[in-house]
Image (cartoon, rainbow, N blue to C red; front, top):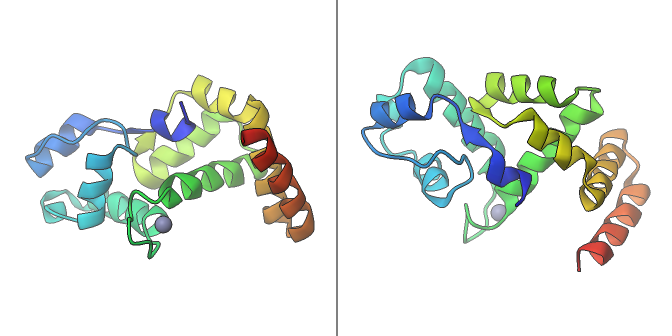
Length: 151
Ligand SMILES: [Zn+2]
């Protein structure tokens, strides 16, 4: 399972009851993304919650793919976001705290740790770091190695 399958909506029950609909707990589940993407009923949310939901949609669901939000961009962007937090020197616990503050989502820090430790994903981390540091060539090289591994 990808790390994005282990990202959950915080206060999920409260959010569901505010929206008067049952949304899945997984932040990247289709029905959750649909709700965020279509923005239906978001006016029912309290201000603090709505702001974070809109931030999430704006930061991760903002691509122009025809099959948005099922194009893979949201997951890719979220992984990039995790790697950027990692690149800032944050450990798993701090990464979970920040994602909760930013987007009202959470993960178990053990899952974040495995994500960071995982082989192929370590290369993704390197790719992310290369990007953060502006080493375009290095990033492309790492991406090639990673794509080979992932095949
Ligand atoms: Zn896309």
